Image (tube, rainbow, N blue to C red; front, side):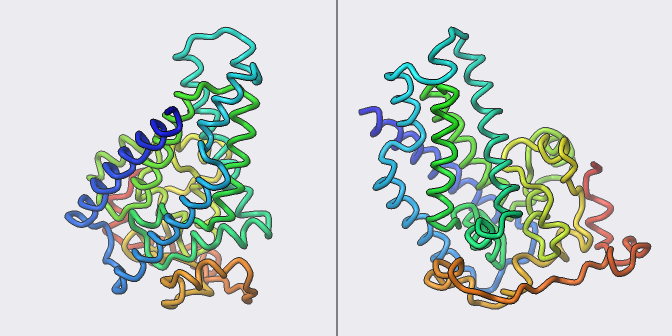
Length: 295
């Protein structure tokens, strides 16, 4: 019953948030949409279906199940000490958010992890379905990492469920093509990751890709000096994806699943700031530059 309840709650939250963000970005898009959006959506949804099957086979109750096991076994920090639930909840959400951020950073800098994670970055456009586009191997690695930490800290099952819902919801929010009012972006960005902030992470320019790793809280990128406030070409002028895969291939499901096992020569997109250090004001999209929130 606990497993059923966990799955039902997560599914209900997922459907509600996905529909809301899909409608939002349809009514108020930030950028021009990629022409072959239908094929992209089929591939990204296909990834989600495969990932869900893999998770339910290998980890039937996901991270919540690990928390339930740890509690029954008396294993982990919060199962050994008595703390108020509100404290455990806040600690778990913040701690696991940092853990996911750290995993994301490592996946960009360890070559064997990058081969898997670049499936996510190979998406040639960014919208709410991009939050669904993760290779099954990455989902397995992520679940093992989260599961180990959940057990170690003895996280309450409800706190883990809350974190998972927040993580999935925020991923759909900040991957979306929704155009937030600029005043709202300014208010939110010091605390949480907004679509304009995370979109920079999907820039074709590697210097921008290796910043703004956060999904939920924006404090980790600022704290560790990997925050970028504004893309060099502006939000509407930046190119999304990987330089070596600027073609329709990433919109295919089979191609995307096989990408980690293929070998391609890495292509580096020209970085205007590196080529012309004093010409940022000349190449930045003027409208976006005027509107983009300050750091």
